[in-house]
Every structure is written in structure tokens, then in C-alpha cells.
Image 1 (cartoon, protein in one colour):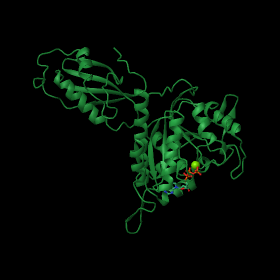
Image 2 (image 1 turned 90 degrees about the vertical axis):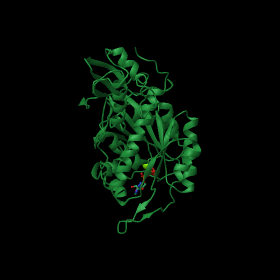
Image 3 (image 1 turned 180 degrees about the horizontal axis):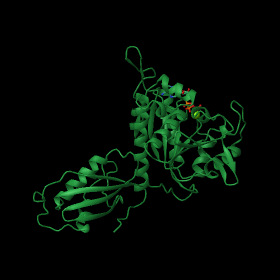
Image 4 (image 1 turned 60 degrees about the vertical axis):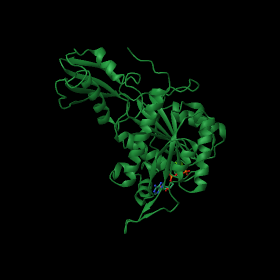
Length: 375
Ligand SMILES: Nc1ncnc2c1ncn2[C@@H]1O[C@H](COP(=O)(O)OP(=O)(O)OP(=O)(O)O)[C@@H](O)[C@H]1O
Ligand SMILES: [Mg+2]
């Protein structure tokens, strides 16, 4: 709960509400005119208004935000305060709670108990940084206060145990399924916890499907706001199975700036469209390199191609992550940069992308169905 008293807005005489007694109805009507800066719809149809307490000219607005670390909180409060000043409020307080809305899907896939939003991290190309991005986004979302899970869906080359610094043998299993391993605030499930590191596992298509099903459904997740899935490269069995096994709120497509990587990213976008999975947008990884000695910015693989590709594909550009030794070292040492060096520009980039992903998830969940005003 956050309580904050905003500065008094005078006696209401400067608004239209001269002498008018405030009522909950008047507050509601005023908020019908206020649009959420991120989601672009009014607060009533977004179900963000949870009622008001009126005491003379003072109003306490119960406001529900759809994500942790909501980036436009102050702007939203200003919009509300201004709208209420016009109907005669002279002081506005807020009682804020956070309720991450849940993506319902189209009803064709079984929901995962307790999991609100499933987000796939994918690319057609190998080695572009899917696992690195999935790991750091998961940690960033957890740091914002959300409950986060992460599934390593790369059956043949699971890397998340290394990136989280957890060797095999960690995953506990019971009659009720796998227990996620919690680290850096993220609940992780990976076949890599079950098989010895470096062991070659030969999977056939149907086996991958059933492994994915288990990694999603036979897990004691608890309450999860965002379940990220780190996919193997390619339009593989894993991606197909996953889209069939669970309602995916959206996909984050990772690319590096070179033309070949962008072509592969476009294929991933097409694949998700065919699978009827919404695409949240593209991330450009290894976007640029800052030389430590001179601070010069080098664009080793080119730069900005992913933004252009996003424009061409008419999807969002979610941000760019620099090529940084610390990111690579964090992956190798099991110490994600977001958890260990939050001020590093790469960590800041991950945090900004995590915020955009959470906004996209909130927008999908809240705007997916016709929103019926709650009276
Ligand atoms: N921004 C970055 N800066 C420096 N190194 C990075 C960056 N992103 C990823 N790497 C490194 O590049 C390598 C490949 O990254 P990662 O394993 O995340 O890619 P991937 O797309 O998941 O690969 P695969 O297709 O094999 O699953 C790793 O060593 C990782 O640490
Ligand atoms: Mg990977």
C-alpha cells in the first residue's frame, strides 16, 4: 500500500465544481475522462478505479496498477488530480495496490495453475542471447516486485543452470511435480538440473513435447505473475509444443543487428503469428560496444537494424542491450548482471526492457476482451 498526500489544489473555485458536493459518482464520471498514459484507455474501462472515499473536499482514490514498477505512476496521479480538481476536489490522496492482470488466451490451451502471464523468449538463430535475455529479464521483473518463474525449454542444450550458478541435482521432485529452484528471486525449472552438465541427450519430437508439458504443467509454481520461457533456437518442436501446451501472452524476439540475424528474427515473428501467439516485440542484443579505455561506441554488428525490422514487421521495438564483457562473464559465472551490477548500462537496458515487457503483458491482458465497465 502506498499513501501519498498530494499538495492541496485550492478550494475548488478554479474548477467547474464550484459549490458542488463531491460524490463517488462524480469521481467515477471524472475518471472516465482520464486515460492511462501507458495503456491509452480510460481508468474505468481498464478497471483501475476501485472506488473513492470522500471527506468534504478531500478524495482518496483507490487505484489498482497493473504491474510492479509502473513507469507512469506520477503522470497518472497528476491526470487524476487534475480531473478531480475540475469537479471540486481540493485534496487528492491515493491508495494504491498492484494487481497484475492475467492473460486468458483463446481457451484452446490449458492454463497453468497460479500462472498469470506466460512470455516466450525466442529467435530462430542460435547464440543471439535468448538465455541471457530471459535470465536478466526474469531477475529484473523479480526485482520490481513481481513473482517470476523461468522455464528452460532448451532440452538439448539447457544453459540456465549455468547462468543461475546452479549445477545439476538441484531440482527436487515430488508426487505433485517438480519444485522450482529459486535464485535471485526467480523460480527456475530446467532439464539441466536433472541431467549431468555436458551430457548429450538425444530427443525425438514427441519426447520434447512431453518434456515441455512436464516443465510447464507438472511444477509446483505457486503464484506467478510472469512465467518466462527460454526457447531453443529455430522453429523447433519445443516452440510448437509450447504454443500448444500453454496460453502464451506474448513472445519477445531476440536479434543481433546483422542482416542474417534480422532475417531469422523475422522468421520467428512469422512462426508466432502462425501459432497465433502475440509478439510483444523485438530486442536488439549486442547492439553496440563501449570501449572501456576510450568510452568510444563501436557498432560491431551494425546498429539499429532490429528497430527497422520491428517497424517493417509492425511490431514494437523493446530496446537494445550493449555487448558487454560483464554480461558474458555474468552468464558464465552464474551471476546475472541485473542482480550484481544494477548500475551497469547493460543492466539498466535489461531493466528498461523488463518494464516494457510488463507494460505489454498488462496491455494484452486488460485489452484482450471487451472491457465491460464495472459499475
Ligand atoms: N549483450 C551481451 N554481451 C556480451 N555477451 C553476451 C551478450 N548476450 C549474450 N552474450 C553471450 O553470448 C553467448 C550466447 O548467449 P546465449 O546463450 O544467451 O544465447 P542463446 O540465444 O540463448 O543461445 P542458444 O541459441 O544456444 O540457446 C553467451 O556466452 C552469453 O554470455
Ligand atoms: Mg539459449
